[in-house]
Length: 359
Image (tube, helix red, strand yellow):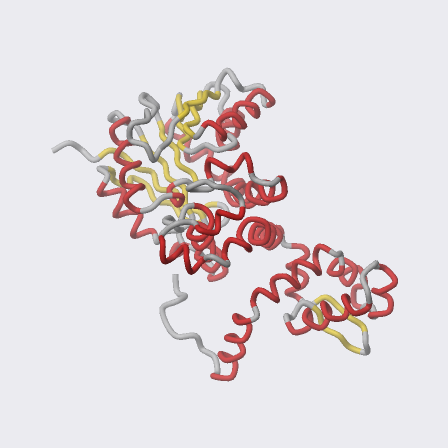
């Protein structure tokens, strides 16, 4: 990681402009969303190099001239469009807003899941609680309420969550199955996408999903639809309650985009409970996106921004971690990292952990 280790090379004038962009960032965000939602980005893109005039755009949309014009003007300032001879053309930033899946998933997630709750970020930081979650329901964390979120919010949440993990599956499956596990314990398995990927990859493996009852109900319904209910099993628990059971007897314990949902002390507790369930020769595989392991600064930006979703909406005390912090917690829990692989999928890191040898 070469970024963030020295001052940005820019003039004071440019730095002042960046400060103004930050000040008006909510305006820019909503303009980008409206341009996409209303179809203006696509219409300008369709015009190609010839471009399209304001009058032509008015003829294609039910929006007023005023509405279209203010969006276009701000779009010019944001680098979404460029305009010559009164004809608008899509610029590079506009192209990626329209065509890049990651940008679309991130934008929908921020609008549908995060936007209102982030207004309460200051109180969330002061109180160590997800104050912004009140916009969706009366839960301590978002996880018990995932199945009860408004449909569009739920859709954007799961599309965001799955987008990053799904891109890693093809690379991960050979790595996970090189030890030939007969029984995988998917800790925090959510809707079961990883479990079903495993059963497709290996026709003999069994997978037990450990999760809250709401998530398990969805996962098992999906298991029936995928015709693997005989090999995908539910194990209901609350990983934050030490009085609840923890599955014993798996060959490989799997945690994907899971530990970032907890505070440091909670992570250590969960890892210690995993250690207590493991036998010699078992493995724990942890898949996460660490901001310091990202190959590009854009990745680190997205990962660090996601931390504030946890602060204001998800639970108030977790985050996307620096890999050094995670390695310390793994060591403290009684594990060592046997294999450490970066650049899986969209910036994931796989840590293959084993029990420390007994003295």
